[in-house]
Image (cartoon, rainbow, N blue to C red; front, top):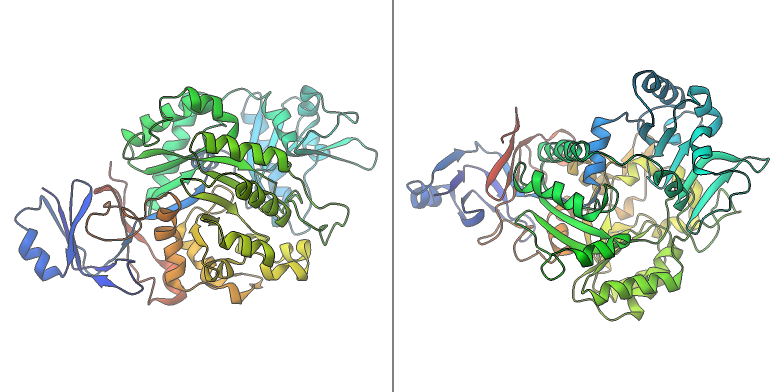
Length: 528
């Protein structure tokens, strides 16, 4: 017994513009598709549920190819500074210090939201409190700002050297100014009390509820290192996703969790359940443009004293890729700057070919020679279109005009024959896939429009979050399209994304989200 959906506009994504009117679903699979008349006649007596969708629009389930699910849930639960000016941020932090206990944490700080682009420093946080350790994560999650109490606890002073793969910012006198980058943040995180399992579980539940409401049927997430290790985090995922909230969770394996992965029962079979599977080995090659830690081949235009920060040198990257190959794992490498991209490509090229698809995450700054190298490899690029909305125009000042032709250049990647998948990098960017699609097509914010030659068509933009996300994890034969035999993961909207123009992406509402044939969200309330 299954579900019959009819009287809809169903975009199959098999080819651009292809439509059917009705679907029959059984046991989590698409059994039939075609005209409403034919399917109603054929299946209505067999169906346990029949739905007249009154002209609604059905798409393959939207999947976010790069996000941080638990961190997104934490953002929903904790103080969020992602839209705050400096004055607002300090007021929110002061309020937390009155209400909460020992460590005070906030997420999402972005100095570019302040009219003066004013930085938070140790001096600002010391005025809030020196009784509480204060920890503020920058929106990129590659930097944090702490007060003097935290610096003292971590033993960070003017004599502390920068760690490998990290940076301690200093004032004009050489004293730490409270801003820590990448590996330097780990000095502090190692001292913070571990999160309780119940707290992590609640964050994941919140995140998946929000994903369902935004039309997401799945996501590729990197959580298995930051929440008490691989084993405990997998336990939480199984409790939440398998039992409570169906969601296609594809989980990357942080390279520092290799020993835990080796000790797990999942080394021979990475599919844990219909909803949970382990993916590639996640490696960070560099930092982010916001903190000037993305590794560039030439100095930053707005700060010629630095070219960024490599988290791993060529030898270390090569060894990590080799470690993945020994375990028959693909790699998923965070690369934002072109120097990091060059080193990562070399590491992939010099190791044996992966039996699974390697992925490069972000690729915000490239070059012509690197484009040619990428096109020769069986790799997938995970792009996050909404960064155009958030990073322009300041990123143009940071990179300079010369580098812009190969920056945030997703049309160029696609036209070069490189497979791309679409994501949000939530909680860094908004998790809504429709906002990501809009950014990919229109490339604008309230200050202007940027690099319109790199604008995607509506079909290409939707494909990033459907076909592209499925291809990235070798699921193109079962997901990403509406086709007989494919998984019944569907996103149902009230608007036509292919004929409704810009307004459709800005105003469309999610009417229903279906995962494995189950309705997990309906407008007006979540269906358990």
